[in-house]
Image (cartoon, rainbow, N blue to C red; front, side, top):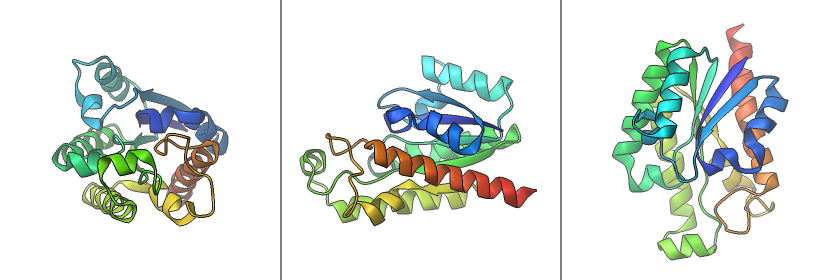
Length: 190
């Protein structure tokens, strides 16, 4: 099994690709850049986009994981939905299954959340709704990592010191959630 992960530091933090490989037995390749949006993965004029376009065109993948910039679905919804639609189309053309890696709200009371003037509950619910809608509209699998963070954030230390990125435990939860969705889909197809 081969998995391509497209994202940013939420995907590369704490070696999420390596953890996903261990849990699934797959070969996992990640195309990431800190702060990258999915729209960049579509742009062949950027280093990241050119690399991604080449990988989608020339290599065979079983699953392609899509992770948008942390607040992209909220601050740039048109770009988010259009990018997911375009990427899912490219992924399906090559016979692979798209997986949306739904991310989490910033840490409740954290400096980044406060600086943005956002409410934790609102950010969590709006991110979840955006990823669910994008998954439904594009018949993509949904790995609801943000939902897992929401359920466990009050009892577990899921965030790095910046209140945005995942801690080691947060990355472990992300890997388990992604692996569960991918393996369950693979099993159901057999």
